[in-house]
Image (cartoon, rainbow, N blue to C red; front, side, top):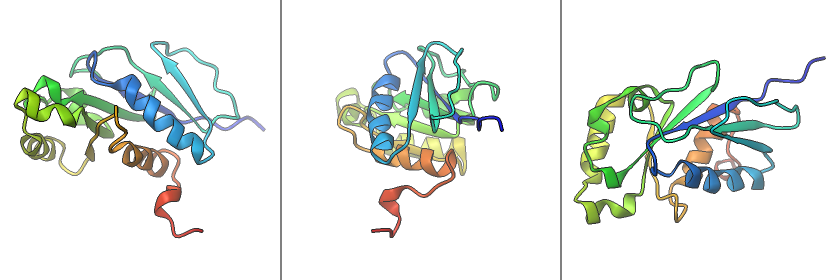
Length: 167
């Protein structure tokens, strides 16, 4: 019997948007719940071991046109940050339009850079339709539990432990 294929999550976004910080916040949450996680940073060549539950592939500093080939990633998280201004979602780009989950990071900086989270929310809804997006602050961990929930539900096809009624 051959080992099962390990799901791969692609994380893309512009330089400095918080890709690494998001991974550093989400992976411990997944690990605490018993998931074994591998990380590949800027290297798409890996050997998938049958003891892992999923693999994160971090893309290095891409622009808004970036996507992951389905040959590389089963699920695509695209991350942007508020410090680039509230115009980011309406600029579209394949990453913003086609990712499985759009993460809008550094929400604490909005008042300091004149960005409106309401405008970003409106534009993300308009551009993405029913596809999910989430506001996070990866530095403090705000919203990262919700990102982990999307991964557990959409990639691993399980219910996140913190949302179940199990004791």
